[in-house]
Image (tube, rainbow, N blue to C red):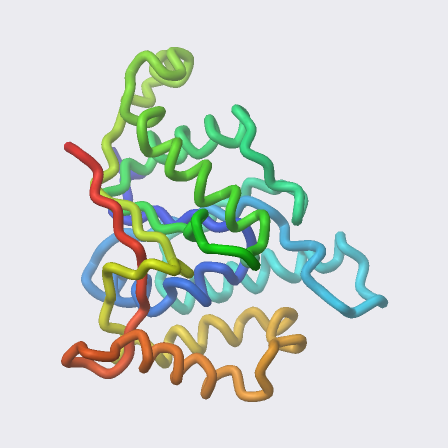
Length: 231
Ligand SMILES: [Zn+2]
C-alpha cells in the first residue's frame, strides 16, 4: 500500500509535535522511516494579538506547520480542521482517527499524554484519549466500522503509542544529532514563539532536553510514556 507510513503523529494543534517530538521525528526520517502528521484543530485561538482575526491566524498556523514539517522531512500533513479549544471525544473524531490509522497503517502512533495531571490543555487531553481508544480496540477490530471495511480500510494493529508531555516517562529517544532541526522546526511557528514563556526558548529547550537525558549516555533526549500493544 503506497500510503503506508511507519509513524503517525497526531496533534491537537499546529506546533504540539514540534515541542513534543520533533527531534525524534527528524531522527526517524533520517533513518528512512515515513512520517505523517495529522493536525486536528486550526489553532486559531492561539494568540494574544488582538489585531489578528482567527481566520487569519488559522492560515498562518497551517503555513507554519507545513514549514516545520518540511524541515523535519515529514512526508505529509493532514489537517482535520476542527475549531481550536473545541476538541471533544466524539464518535466522529474517533472514527476519523481510526480512518487515519487504517489508511497509513503505522507501527508507531505519537501523540500527547491524556493523563498528564492538573494543568493541561483540554484539546491535548482529548486527543490523547481519542487516539488511544482508536488504536485499541477500534482500529484493530473488523466489526468496528463495517463501512470503513467496505471501503477497503482493513483493520490494523499499531505496535506502540508514544505519549509526549507525560508525567510518567518510561522511554527516551536520543535527539543529540537532531536537536538543531527541532529548534529550526520550532522557529517555523513564529506566531507562537512571540508569547513564549521564556525569553530564551532555545536555552529553555536545551535545558529540558538535557534533563530528559539524565542518566543516559547521550546529551539530549525527548521523553515519552510508551505503551506497547498486544499483537
Ligand atoms: Zn497544543
